[in-house]
Image (tube, rainbow, N blue to C red; front, top):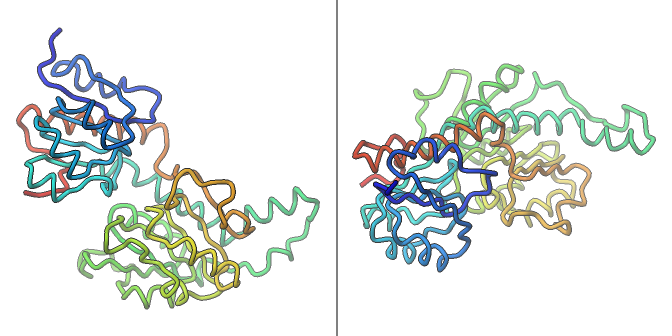
Length: 320
């Protein structure tokens, strides 16, 4: 069967693209499944693509200028920091993400990380395995109902995290320059970033990575946090300056931290943060469940199908 359109999966670390193939089979029966990692590989292998689905592939201005047939780039995931959105808009290329596939998973993971830190679950388990059965070694552990959580970014995921921690009885404050007070539930109080860092017992990061948020939590900002506070990041690694975080833990100016994301992934076993007992790291897995993985693949393919069929996209992020 001859393809009606050319759709290419430029890179994907999933075990198959069967879901994408099922969604697109009538408009593109043959979908190349590539492993492009560099700009040159994308240019050489994706030049004929009308729809390009990506995971980590760098879609720079140089790359986009060499994709003359491209109408849509769909990214597996929420963040689109690997795509030059301005260049894509200038070239008339729609860029879409899948903003709602892992809302519950990521907020659940952030909550799990918070509880692991505040209840000292991982630390206690490690001590027990080493023969130290003594709850007094976990001191101090505080009741959640007397604690304040500060959420940076109250979009879908940050909002879900706010809802879940409010259910625990925590006071919820948040910072988000793109959200007005009337758009958040009455249990969320919007404050400045500085106020959030100063007042919170737990800080959970849920904003996108951009030029404005890169290194948002640097040494100056982290130094505003209480020495008894915990930091959680399930958003993007480069939002938190890892060298500054390491300094804070080394000087005992933070009670602990948990990251699902690092500035360079995968994290090397020699990473300076990995030596701390009060540091938890997971391998960029907050988004993952069997259900969310299937939803992600289906929705990315459906977005490509819409655009190539002449319909309006649901998740376009670069308006033009």
